[in-house]
Image (cartoon, rainbow, N blue to C red; front, side):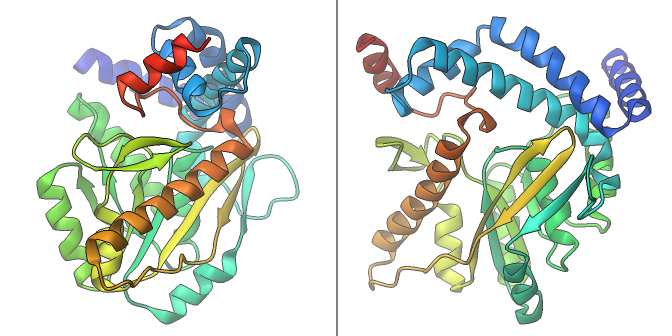
Length: 299
């Protein structure tokens, strides 16, 4: 563990010395070269066959290379997130589309749920939103090495500029997050990954087990659900896109409304991903094995 942590610190020092743009280029170049050769890239290809069957093999390969490049750039940029400035004329920095929705929520107060996915540099979303006075707590999967985990948490805390909870994924973290929102606080969730005990709403036209917790909380507290994601414009140059709050369903059937709202969220994710498919993390098994198996057999 200590050797891993030493290597991680050395990599962190290197990335910081390179500056945000060159660190982004380095991370993107390494991952673009190596990533497509790894077995997990077959998962991405299978997912693309399911979600976008109109793509040929060449197009799928281009997207998978782009996925790895985006992931590498996200890693390379991570140590620099805290230093990125808003509305820089060129080069590293970020801007915000839809800032009026953040300003409105800051004035309104009370609980808010932010929903997004692993799109673009998703690490930019929490600190970018926090600059408008609506910083939010998040769920967090701890790194296996506690020393490396500490490095990651320190970088995230520095980017946020204020201490906010990071809830561990699992039953305990879910209870803590629920209590946090019940007290009128804000919470952000990335809801684009498979949850085996979720609900089977559709994603790219196929049933996909999806976490219903965000929808259940939103309906329980009748609080705004604000979708948003991050576009990559260039090396360490990012754009946060914030959309208007979703219209919460209110049919009188709570369970049906949870399904409806969860489907609405998946539809927003799908729209964003279709716009720039190489910006999403296709590397996890999002659909059931039988769905991906059928997609392979069609080719």
